[in-house]
Amino acid sequence: MKAVGFAGFSGSGKTTLVEKLIPLLKLRGLRVSVVKHAHHKFDIDHPGKDTFRHREAGAFEVVVASDKRLALMREFEQAAELSVHHLIAELWPGVDWVLVEGFKQSNLLKVEVWRGDAGKPARYPDDDFIVAVATDTPDRLPEPTSRPVLDLNDPDALAQWLVENEDRFDYDPEKYA
Image (cartoon, rainbow, N blue to C red; front, side):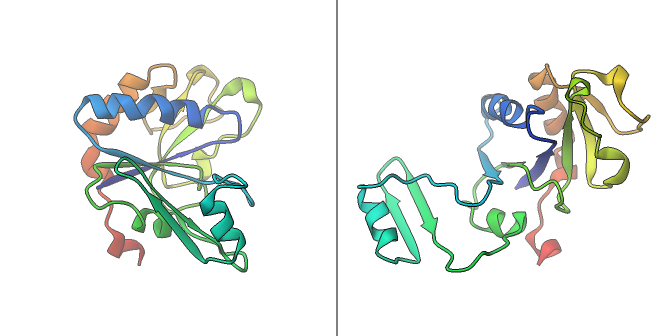
């Protein structure tokens, strides 16, 4: 399994980029999973549904499945800080690539998504886990970098760069245990 993070400030285009990379990697015959960092009390369930009612009744975990889909919902009685590595461990073992959105503080290799017009600082000068910068304004990077600078508006080239550098993104869970 290969794993790469996409880090950047809100509004930088992480979700859009990941959304475009998924089918491009699938076209190359690769199975892709996504791990997404969400904020606080997000919900994927709906009031009135059986699974919602089970959670409301106090179930710690609810797994719902069909012949096309599986979802696991886990309720923590107290706040739990899960690392990206905890979440990757939950994934199906036969996946080729894990695209991680968010988790900008993690020790996972990451591509920084940076837009000059956003007025936000770049993270790459201070984060050794950032291995490339995807931007729409390479001429406005705040500091020179020896890292690859990729065109944020050319997701196919970014997908190709990932595949060409795939050995760099081998994920070894023992390394993070």
